[in-house]
Amino acid sequence: MIQRATRQREAILQVLRCAESHPTADWIYEKVKKSIPNISKGTVYRNLKVLKDMGEIAELNLSGTVCRYEGRQDNHYHFRCTECGQIFDLDEPVHKEMDETIARKTGFTVSSHQLEFRGICKSCQHK
Amino acid sequence: MIQRATRQREAILQVLRCAESHPTADWIYEKVKKSIPNISKGTVYRNLKVLKDMGEIAELNLSGTVCRYEGRQDNHYHFRCTECGQIFDLDEPVHKEMDETIARKTGFTVSSHQLEFRGICKSCQHK
DNA sequence: TTAGATGCAAAGGGTTTGCAACGTC
DNA sequence: GACGTTGCAAACCCTTTGCATCTAA
Image 1 (tube, helix red, strand yellow):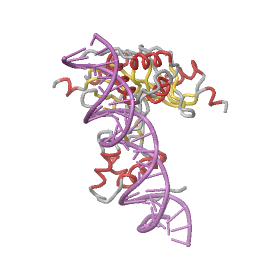
Image 2 (cartoon, chains in turn yellow, red, blue, green):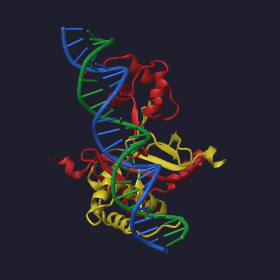
Image 3 (cartoon, chains in turn blue, brown, red, purple):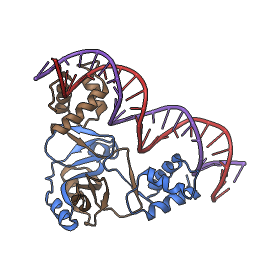
Image 4 (cartoon, protein in one colour):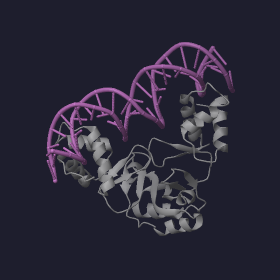
């Protein structure tokens, strides 16, 4: 399937390239609407997906609304298999010193960090 | 406000303590329903929030459905201000070697990682 | 007794999808 | 002309909320 160049897609990419922040789909929608007033949200979402698949843009899967929970108390890192979606706990020690590094460089108060590795888990490798 | 010990809350915590994976709210709901058939989802969500606030459980804000996008191509880290919600790009170099460390320890194929720091940004500190 | 907790159902938000019309190649 | 794209609206999914009722303390 070969993608076509449409006004809408180009406008969306344009907005994203010039954005300073990390816009949400809705923000992009509002922005693009200024040049293409009757663009629909569906188009924005579909194009964001296409652009992501093309490698033109990145999608940040940071704090989302779909949450998972765990009883473990200590802070630790996770691995997410992109094949089966499973999440594994890692027993890699937490690099607390990174917080200080960032705090020093930015002047922000850093309280914690979340680290998630992505890849293919063992059992999916053998499928 | 002092929390009360209810059957529902205890059952939810119990399920979570024994869960091997990182269950979603829905999974927990289905599990708890076996002992308390008429429990409602609202109760599950409310209790997960309470338990989180009490520090009994942790909420994993990993890949969610609410996404943000960016045009930047290179991989980099982020800082999220828990006060204003703003996300900042960090120019900390990406620790690619961590991927190899995890790969060696787990036998998984690691393709990337996402790192998000949390804390208070400069302008929110002065409010 | 009383304030916190529950069940239910409706509402909320962000995202996806079906469909007919449209536009690009 | 074929097939990817669009606009629209409805559907979806997960989560939150309002309300009357219940219940732990």
